[in-house]
Length: 425
Image (cartoon, rainbow, N blue to C red; front, side, top):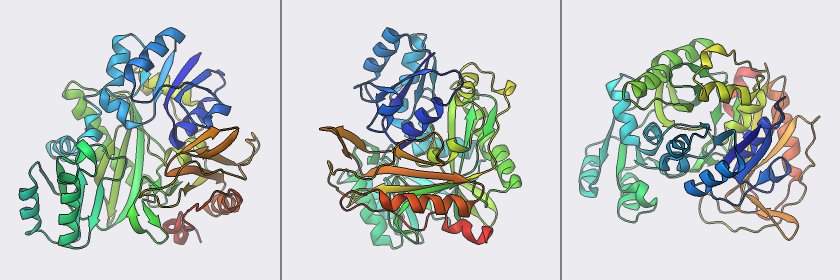
């Protein structure tokens, strides 16, 4: 069996790593991949947004299943193009992926189906957005409507900060096309939670709940990032809460898209804020989260290839998806300056050799091989994950592994999973 994974970050490394464990022993390709993925798959120099190039490669190599990691190719319609060519692909169509590529579309779906979410209004004209802010309480949230790699969200504590966020998006085009429309949203004060689910367009199978850490600094300080670490399962997500989210959020969303004629196949990601025990949707993603993937997949007991095939073949209801009763913790190591501007090409030292026995995995997020050595090639460089019988065990393992990995100016948070510790001690 031949499998092509599209993308080249930490999420895709975790996917390749898990697919490589399949008893079916598939031959894996990854486009474009990175310096960590190349040890498990054949890396192909095709960018994730080169839809025609990826399709030509899949046809030439007779790929049995393509798995899409990042959001950009989904928003560009890779699933539509592959299906037209009769190629099996794990990921939603362009129309279904609007849940992520347009926050306004997502809000409309939630409003029409009474899915709990923060009150919001979208604006295409800056003057109207600025005038609206004059009437709103703070804190308030300003979001770029389109794809901004997790960086298009500003939680403003003052009106002036909110107005600056609108100007940055709409006047300065800080997020490119993604910010030409903005969403101004009510601030919800609670605890964040991620619940991803496999779905074939009808059946919904929730994964282990995770909690991401978006802010760059300890104590949830500093600007938002694409994610500084995560852990799973998050104790805030009780069995009752998971059932509630499935019933009130995930299943109604999948059903709504099916009624619109764009059934969702792949992974539906619900980013939630739990306010006094009630879950509200902050955002939907149309693919697995990063770095949540790096903590959820190590806990998956069922063969990932089997799950993905069941999704693609509309028979997810026939499969029982099982999970290991353990905890995983991931710490992201970033380049100096991230999430602002940062250098690349910094040599990385101390990377452990991959081992089948180890309960620590180093997933490469932004790396490449240059002159025989591994160097940095992005803002988020590595995602170090450990798993074990308890949160304290996994956390101790990961913070034992991280300090030995060295590159100039590296940064990481020292308090990943801090919200869960009172639940465990």
